[in-house]
Amino acid sequence: MKAVYFAWVRERVGKSEEEIAPPAEVKSVADLLAWLKGRGEEYEHAFEAAKIIRVAIDQTHVKHDVLIEGAREIAFFPPMTGG
Amino acid sequence: MKAVYFAWVRERVGKSEEEIAPPAEVKSVADLLAWLKGRGEEYEHAFEAAKIIRVAIDQTHVKHDVLIEGAREIAFFPPMTGG
Amino acid sequence: MSTTIRIQREDFDPQAEADALTRGRNDVGALTTFTGFCRHEAGALSALELEHYPGMAEKELQRIADEARARWPVQGITVLHRYGKIVPGERIVFVAVSGAHRGQAFAACEYIMDFLKTSAPFWKREHKVDGSSGDWVEAKDADDKALERWK
Amino acid sequence: MSTTIRIQREDFDPQAEADALTRGRNDVGALTTFTGFCRHEAGALSALELEHYPGMAEKELQRIADEARARWPVQGITVLHRYGKIVPGERIVFVAVSGAHRGQAFAACEYIMDFLKTSAPFWKREHKVDGSSGDWVEAKDADDKALERWK
Image (cartoon, rainbow over all chains, first blue to last red; front, side, top):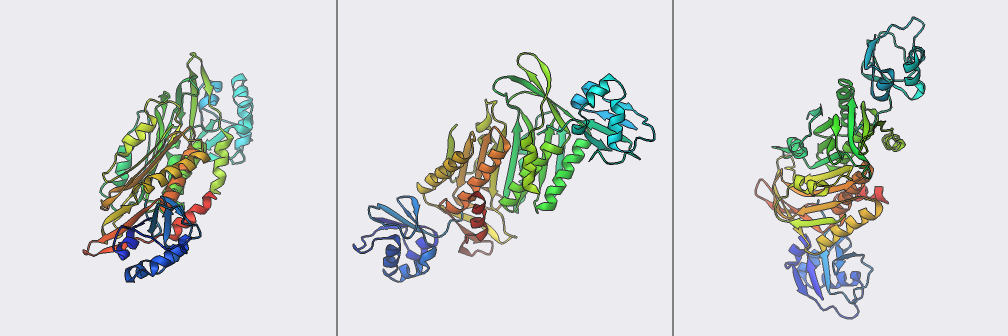
């Protein structure tokens, strides 16, 4: 699946998108956040406060307990500050 | 004092303003409305539902229990419908 | 910042009025505007004729704007109201409020409209497409109810 | 009547957008607009840089407009949001709502702004006049609190 990052999540990870292939035991958004956090220093920094990271699956907001099965694009970003 | 009339009050009275000289026993706005009502058929019609008539003394809204002493200009009109 | 109140027969230019509140400033974060139009009322109305109480109308609008300013720390307030004959599709009233933040600009703008409706001395008479005229628009309960929110 | 959603780098013309909702119509009684501007934050800010999530941003704004329409029988809705670098005094966002009556136009306009603030995927980064940059604007509790009104 494709992971996309915005704002300071993007800056900390150091890229705006990438293909990821989490193992089968990563089932929920929360699992995925924990898995991403273990992928290296940049990810550790980007996802250190995982609870405040907002997530969208296929461009729709989701909560952290939602299952990621079937997702094509998962986006990670800080709370929104538009308007 | 000067009496001024607007909208359907003006139409019913048949004039937009006039000098009036109510007797001394006419003290409040309510007294004045009752006195005006007795001035003839047009006034009877204009002030038949005296309770809904809005009154302004010297261009400030007042309630019917306010005293008219010292007023220079008293306006009578229906509930407002601007905007 | 000052308050602009104008009562006029002619139409007005909403964008020019809005620009006057924001031009050359960089401390304005929010601008809320309301424009009220004459509706044709399902095709029955040919025009509205607006009567007002000159002198008192300006004073009332100023008083309402002052009260809004006492409630919310807004920057600019503009209130324009037309009188005379106005045909469906034409503008009748315009309120613009600028401020640092959106909440205060929205609240002050709606507050001004709500009180304008019920306490500014304007009256509308309807002219119908069938040529008849003379019906004065009746005050609406909904307009009185709108005030409850601000108590 | 349809909803217009646009996300663009360029500035927009509020009056042209407002006119598009009312031109040639005589059933519009009320038009409420909101314009959000970039403030200079007491002289410290040289620009805001707005990042967004293309595709999702449009979808979210459309969803918010649809929800407003489900709550109030409004006529037209226009929501414009800019991205890229925006200097103090420039417009960032514009919402216009037309309807038969003012209450629904005010409510829908403010509802859209409140949800846009907290759920449309846009992020602001500050550029300071001292040349420093990189500070992302933090989400405000006040914006979350604003949503309570609509529950």
